[in-house]
Amino acid sequence: MKNNTHSLAQVADILSLSKSTIHKWENNKKLVPNLNPTTGEKEYSSAQIMQFDQAKAMFNSEWDKELKTTPIKKYNCIELFAGAGGLAIGLEKAGLHTKMLNEIDRHACATLKKNRPEWNVVEGDIADIDFSQYFGQIDVLSGGFPCQAFSYAGNKLGLEDTRGTLFYEFGRTLKECSPKVFIAENVKGLVSHDKGRTLETIKQVFSELGYTLVEPKVLKAIFYQVPQKRERLIIIGIRNDLAHYLDKFSWPSPYKRIMTLKDALKAGELYDCDVPKSEGQKYPKRKAEILRKVPQGGYWRDLPDKLQREYMQKSYFLGGGKTGMARRLSWNEPSLTLTCSPAQKQTERCHPEKTRPLTVREYARVQTFPDNWEFSGSIGQQYKQIGNAVPVNLAYAVGRSIVRLLNVIS
Image 1 (cartoon, one colour):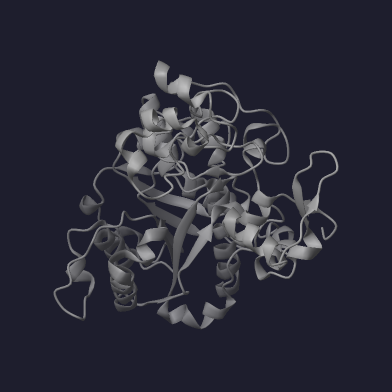
Image 2: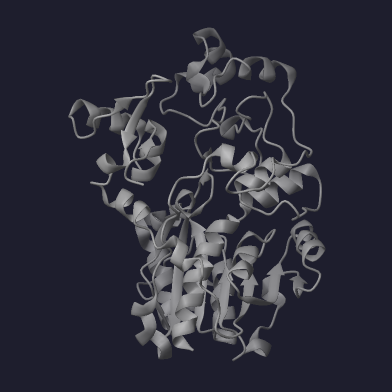
């Protein structure tokens, strides 16, 4: 690995830095690139970037060893807010047995039932479900509760103070079925929401419910065989009577390289065939005419000034980079984080060569769904389900860490 070379974009991803920071480091001789004799582009040797901890972790990864993780017995899990199944598929791949899933959206439920008829999918409002019937039968409770602001009536907030929020329902489920371990995932922004007070409240409630937390961590999907710059906050708790096993938990090791959009859409290491054809949204005529002029990996600032003004309108005069607008993806970089709609002006996700949004199946591949996982509902509903999902390979990596922990507890 140490003799390999990496592009500017790859180094920026590996080190979690902007390309402009890498340029500054070049000027300071902190990083010294070579020029590729064929392409003339800058390249950085693995040996050179090994001075940084992030690169060391990737190049000396335990990924292959961790991939061999299997459960030593049957571990049951319940999933809340299951969506289209990204987290559930990942945990299933890791060897966990899905006892029950709850989801309120009928299209997402139809997706789950279509693909896994054997799963116990309970459609409806979580507030109407009694989970005490599962008490003592569940090893893992998982789910991504939507983050809603809590009111801060006092300094000592408990579960009751979060009533009316979906977090309350997650906490109530935890109390009623008492699993050994739970996995809660959320947006990265929860870390700083209300100056960190929301996350502190959440930690406090988990403590009140009898769980000790692993320090919550924001995981970057690009490090776990996902060709997408998506970040998710992962909160893992262990029931207090098992908390002495806390030091046995380890976060998943990073994969040995960063996957790109080419890995997602073309035959190779990630998929054994090119992406299947599928439906997708289209751009209006004028929008397509403008986007045709955006180069691969470029965005609105790569357009002539006259077109910048036409496309951006009032936003042209506002501050900030708005790098998602008129954005064309690049074959040689991971995709930007997928949203619920690939054609919205604020969150453009244009194909690297063709002037159109990514199709449904292309969207699914960027989230590392298997090609045989079918989505129900209209095209808009399918995009929404995929855009809201936890990337399957990220869930799989976290699932292996959970299985390793449960194997020690058992």
